[in-house]
Length: 213
Image 1 (spheres, rainbow, N blue to C red):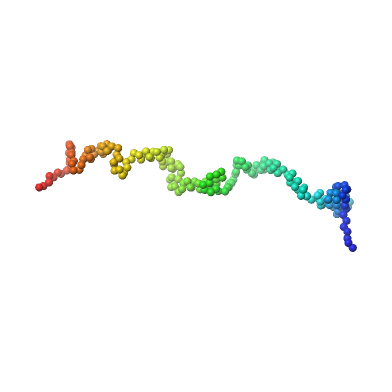
Image 2: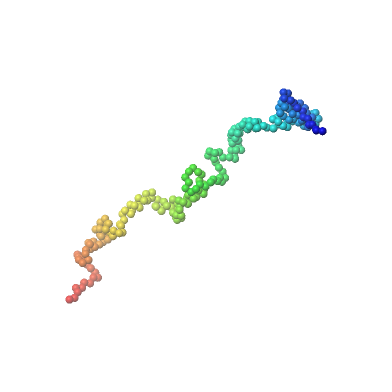
């Protein structure tokens, strides 16, 4: 013989809402609300609880509506202005970072608004020094070597301009006569070796030989 399981039912067209009372573990289904109820407790004083249907489980439409109603922007705005967020997170604009913040190191020679790490700066400085000797690997040392002369190149050019050219063999003297006088040579230096004329003065330690015949 087949067994039957009966559940209290409120037919379509009846009043909506839960049953006024149910016995312990007694079930009731409302076709009006499409909700299944159960009595929890003891005897006729059991609490009526919805256990299935729109009144118990969230439908897709309910979840969609509930999510749309959440004001995420407002909640985030309230949080980031709270004392907890202020102490924990740095603002996007002009952040005052603490500790040892890190960032990706850009390739050598990068010229952009990318953050320059200490590794990037060290490489850039090393490339500028380029194995220069220790006595000339700072700007201060280079300046001292040039006598702190801001016009060093002009000074050197002018200094070299007043020098004689070695390959000219003194032919580029400004005044050969003045140079001979400064050297104490007088006119002697301009006479031919085969015809020397000496006027005045004396010669010591020279022996003249008239020769033989």
